[in-house]
Length: 153
Image 1 (cartoon, rainbow, N blue to C red):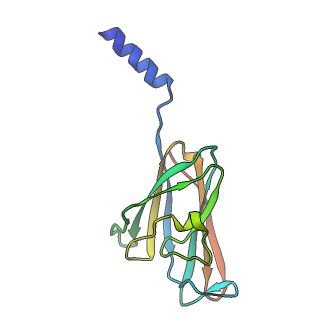
Image 2: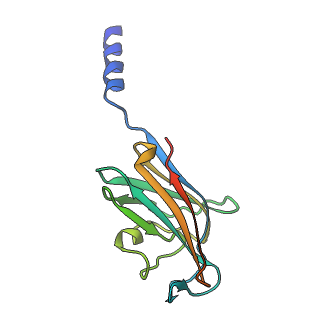
């Protein structure tokens, strides 16, 4: 019996068991509307875009969880999306913006009931499989960004 247990462990360890990884966005504030004048969104505040890049040759199935700034869970159901191989996408976490987001970006679930907070994107794989950044465009056309963010195992 002990021989079978040892062989089972050798097979599992040698096969490269998949691990979970995550990319954390510590803060975003996606308050602006979806009408754009020139290079700026309408309304007060700004439009935040979370950009992610799949660095692998395979599609990544991801899950996203959201928390508003006070820590309340604002994760929608369903909360999953797929990023094709070697593809990047940029999505607004607080609302759909068909003017600025493509079809793949619109498929990322939005925060439920709030527009300011944080998110964690998780997937099965290595931490380096997904990279990202946050880019903000304010209604006065000022822009800022932070990143790059690299996933962790």
